[in-house]
Every structure is written in structure tokens, then in C-alpha cells.
Length: 263
Image (cartoon, rainbow, N blue to C red; front, side, top):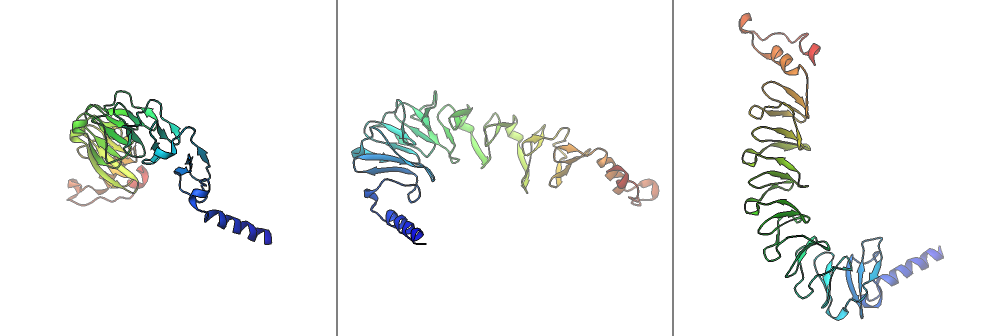
């Protein structure tokens, strides 16, 4: 019991030491950059440890957005120097993108061909654009930034296509692309020629007549669907069960033996 009390007191004493008198520790400190005297450290998130940044100039060091930092000579990402970066003009745009007067970076990697002067980060922080392209974490996904817009947190579009959050092309018909419904983890979308659920096409579905009954059930004028699969014979059986038969004086037919034998 006494040993436990001594250990607890040691931890408390360590935690309340002046920040400048100890190395950063992920048990007590947030991840990021720390200047201690003439040394600069980068601390990883718990249970990570602090590593001294060799050659960093403590007197001029600045912690920037997220894992970016710089001193008078170099720019850094997660404590490592970014090759070729111009420290004098380097700026972090968010925790994923940075630029200097010559280049744009995602992490510590140069985005080939990106225009530093016009580059900006979009509302969804993993997307950026310059005058010629839209990028997803440095990978170009659109060459039409003038018409690029966010549809919702998970989809975007330009004049050529609709894109998922991962950059997958969801539709080549953005003019007619609409969200039918997005509830209970089922996202139904359509354009002029395709219906999809959670980005998976529903083969044979008619976009004009398609409607969601109750997720994951949907129908068009010829089919009944469960998620992406057609329920064979279900639409025909349902019509037989509920449609009024003019040959019987407008009576609704009995469902006995119709739905039960077909579903």
C-alpha cells in the first residue's frame, strides 16, 4: 500500500513540475511541438513518446497547424523535416495541407503540379483546389474546379461527374443526380439512367418510377428490391393481390395463396 502511495505522489509531482523543467510526456501533455530550453521536441499522442528534433532552432521555432512546424531554416511534419520546403514562406493551411512560394504539400509530400499561388483548402478539410484541379489528400479527382461543389459531407460534383468521399465516381450525369433518401444508414441516389443504394447500382431499376418503400425495400413500376437485389416474382404477386379486378365488378381480390406462394 505504501509503495502505491509513493508511486502516486511521484506521478502527481511529475505532472505539476514547471513545463520548462521537464521533457514532454504523453501521459500529461497534448501531442505536438514543445520547446525546452535550446531543444525542440515532437510528442506523439499517448502512449507515444517525445523525440528531440535534431538541428531544430529553438529560438525561431513556431508550432503551426496540426503536425506542422517550422524554424528559420526548415519546415517540419510530425517532427521530421520536409525536404525542399522553403521555411521563409512556408505556411500550414490545416493539419493536412501546407504550401510555400513554390510548392503545395499534403503531409510531407509535394503535390505534383499543384499551383501554390491559387491553392486553397475547401470546407471539407481533406479537399483542396487550385486553378486547374481539385485534390483529395493530394490526389487529383477533378479538372473542373470552377464548377466543383460539395453536395453533402460525403459527396461532391463538378460538371462532369459526382464523387464519393473517397473520390470514387458515383455518376457521370451530375445534371440529373439527386439523393432520393438518406436515412437509417441507407443512401439512395439516382441519375437519368442508374439507381444506387450506398453507392452500389441496383441492376434493372427504373429511375423514373423508383421509390423507397422502407429501407432496405424499394420498388419501381416492374420490380421489388431488397437492397440491390430484385425479389423475384414479388412485384407480380403484389399487383395480383391488391389491384382491382374489373372482371369481378371492381372487387379487390383475395390475397390468400397469392402472396404466400410467391414471396
